[in-house]
Length: 245
Image (cartoon, rainbow, N blue to C red; front, side):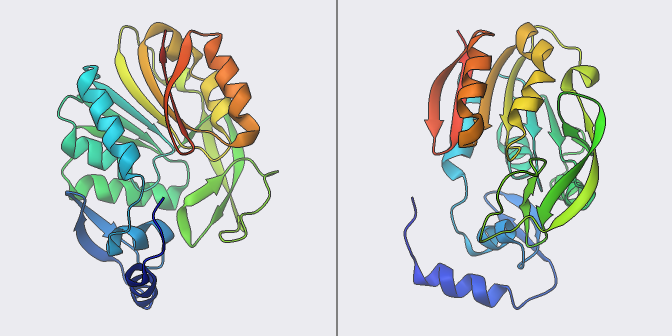
C-alpha cells in the first residue's frame, strides 16, 4: 500500500486544471491521457497503479509460455497495451470494453503503440447471455463502470451516469481448444456472469485467470471455478489468480 505523498497530492490537483488531453509516454508505452480522469491522472503524475499485478501477469505469461491474452474489462488499455508492448510471447490480445467512449480511447491507445495487428478491441461486454444491459459509470473515472446496479455507490466515485451497452457470451465469439491463455477479468461485480459465458473456453483450454473479486461474489466464483478444475494459486490485493489443477 502506497502511503501519503505530498508531491502526488499537489501534482494531481495542478494537473486537473488542464482540460485538454496530454500525449505522454508512461511505463514504456504511449498514451493519450486526460488529467481530469482518475486513472489517467495517476499515470501522468507517476502514481503506482496495479504495477505489481502487471509485473505478475507478464511473469506468468513468460514462465508458462502463454500465447493469448483476453482483457475482460479493458478500460483504456492499461493491460492490453503494456502486455502488447512488453510480452513478446503473446501472439494475440483481445480487449473487451462495452462503454463506447472508453472503447474509443482504448482504440486510440492501441494505435499510438502500433499494436493494431496484435490487439483487437471489442466494443461489447461479456456475460451469461446475448443482451443489452444498462451500465452505470462515473464520468470522472473511466475505470469506474458497473453492470451491478444494486451495488451501493462508492462515496468517492459515484455511479451517477447510465448507458445501454451490448453484452455477448465469450463462447459465442470464440471456439478454441488447446490454447494457452491468460485472462484478466476486471468487471466491477459482473465477473460471475462473465465466467458462466466462457465455460467452454475454460474447459477446453489451459487458462490462467486474474479476477478482481468483489466480496459479495468471492466464494461463489471460487467454488464455481473449483468445480471446473481451477484452483487459487496467488493473490494481489483484491485480484485472485486461478489455474487448472
